[in-house]
Amino acid sequence: MLSDVTQTTASAARDDDRQAVPAAPGRPSRRRVHRAWIVAAVTFVTIIGGAAFNSLPGLLIDPLNTEFGWSRGEIGLAVSIDMALYGLTAPFAAALMDRFGIRRVVVVALSTVAAGALAGVWMTAAWQLMIYWGLLVGLGTGAMAMSFSATVTNRWFVARRGLVTGILTAAGASGQLVFLPLCAWIVDRHGWRPASVTVALAALVVVPFVWLLLRDHPADVGLAPYGGEYAEKPAPARGAARRTVRVLADAARTGPFWLLAGTFAICGASTNGLIRTHFVPSAHDHGMPITAAASLLAVIGVFDIIGTVFSGWLTDRFDARRLLAVYYALRGVSLLFLPMLMAPTVHPPMVFFIVFYGLDWVATVPPTLALCREQYGEDSAIVFGWVLASHQVGAALVAFLGGVARDVFGSYDMVWYASGALCATAALMALVIRRVREPSDAVAGLG
Image 1 (spheres, helix red, strand yellow):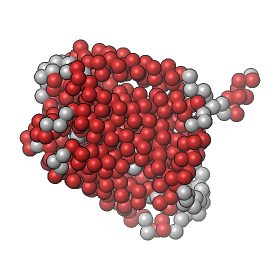
Image 2 (cartoon, rainbow, N blue to C red; image 1 turned 30 degrees about the vertical axis):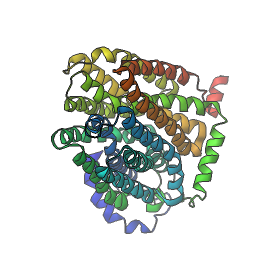
Image 3 (cartoon, rainbow, N blue to C red; image 1 turned 135 degrees about the vertical axis):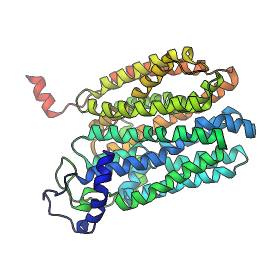
Image 4 (tube, rainbow, N blue to C red; image 1 turned 180 degrees about the vertical axis):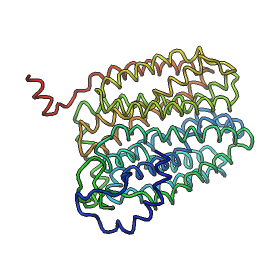
């Protein structure tokens, strides 16, 4: 897909002037590559730039503890604020994109992330860590959360939505793949401050691509969405915050919302809150160098891309509920074995765990988004934003409690076992989500 972008970006930019006047509805596009794929590629790169900061927290727990004497619980609290705000901002970001446009919201979000990362270079107290890394970066990254990719997918694609969701979800893992080894090397050789500057610059570099190439709606360039019919761009939705709260209130009256929110909270707890935040310091506790542990997390990013895209393909073909149950059950089993795999050096069983966990990392996103779309229709992007909020709240709790557990027990073993049990619970919850029967299903059932 990235090679397609390289070949088509220049021609797409030249076409913008001609596209200022929309083509007649239904007129076939002359481009061999539909503009939706260019928008998806820019979204992919944007998420990579915004996700660069997510590579840092696990790498900086030990350096910040050493330099400032802050406990792991204090540092974990700042990370948990970031993760919680990331999730709580997401549903409002989806509504704001409806009101002000995708481009404007994303440019402001990238700038906020860069400001927080740069300001953190001069911090000297734990409360500043919580303001810069927790508040500013949490708000900025939350505006580019998965609801961003959901909005782009819903507007620009009718066909291949599961596949596109998988690809865009994998962007976060791609950022991890790129930035984790780089930031680990910078922290090891030059300290944590240059690493913070690096991720700030990564966010700023993406801004021109967003402004020049991203478009809010297919009608802006006179096109139908990929695989769909031409439709006029709807008027900007007013009362974004009110609509977001109303959608939550309506969804909260339904059982599937709480099941989806609960399973996704456990997903966040067992990925961002647990592995991304505490794997590196846990491996370091067992004598593994930080750079080696960070490289293992980067390998998770490689297989995350494969697993998420494949999960999107599966979601287009199989029952999303059963896919979720399988994903969570396998994740829980793998976590139960992790304490036995920790060692000073990288060995084959640990590599197997990393590959397996990478394939399962966010494979849960395409089926979860598909269930939101099935259950809540046009409001699905905002509902998914609230479900994502639960994901980040779960991540925030484990980021904080994992650090506290390490301070109290001197080991992360209890955290791994508890997370494995939670994943088993999520597998059962996924199976009891009721399915929305389409008219065709009802007819088939009568036969």
